[in-house]
Amino acid sequence: MDLAGVFPALTTPFRGDGSVALDQFKANLARYNQTRLAGYVVLGSTGESVLLSSAEGESLLAAGKEAAAPGKLLIAGTGAESTAETIAKTKRAAALGYNAALIKTPYYYKPAYGPDTYLHHYRAIADASPIPVLLYSVPIFTGITLETPEIVALAQHPNIIGIKDSTGSIQRVVEVAAQAPKDFQILTGSAGVFYAALVSGAKGAILALASALPEKCVELFELFQSGRQSEAQSLQQQIALASKAIVSSGGIAALKHVMDIRGYHGGLPRLPLLPLAESRKSHITQVIAQFEPVAARA
Image 1: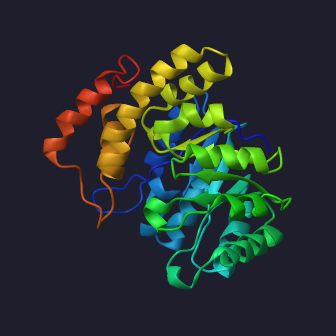
Image 2 (image 1 turned 30 degrees about the horizontal axis):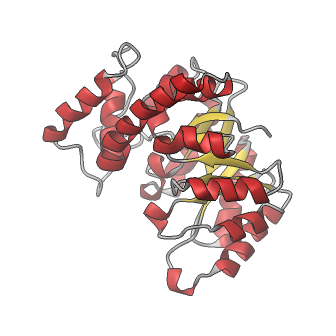
């Protein structure tokens, strides 16, 4: 499975009463289908997956499969705190037609966990999974970092095909690319270092920012692929500033606000996440203005 390219970490739209708006979710996908995104990640961190019920999560997986255009790879976030639940969720995603599973590290009993915990956890899941597995290291949310020795050891498993590394560490990308099997694929989760990650051996990215600015994220990847390095570096500088202002500083509420500006269905986050403060909206709008005409309302 070739994971080269850009995958947006899809957001979850909610109605005014707080329920999941599946029609709006599908409408967003209909627009994304017109871009050169490689595929979609459903139920990732950006999708507010930890704030959804099991039934809501499954409804989004089904809607994603229904709405995605042929040829778009589908990755399901199936990580849970227990190995058994993760396996069950992964099997369900496979049954729905997903191509791969993105599995975050368990973290609740962090003091009791060590490298052996993650080796056993991921190997058990990969043994049982009908679809390929992607490791997911996102310490900003979990407090857990998969280190290079663990990643390289897990990369030997035939059903573990890659990692989404959201640490922003280019050194780790270099180390893993050098030591893991050549078919092990690294996807960065950090838009601010996308270009550097590609230079260092990453195959692509899973980005929250790509839910709001898919064209620009894809453009950066394609500039790199075509050898237009100066243009790629210039665009990376713009994307890094946008990512810091929107994703890093504003979070999901800011990302959804940008989606609203662009004519997507962004809306409000789910409590306890709070809406974007009015004082922040003008600044975010100014940041997005640099991407005109791409950022014009559709």
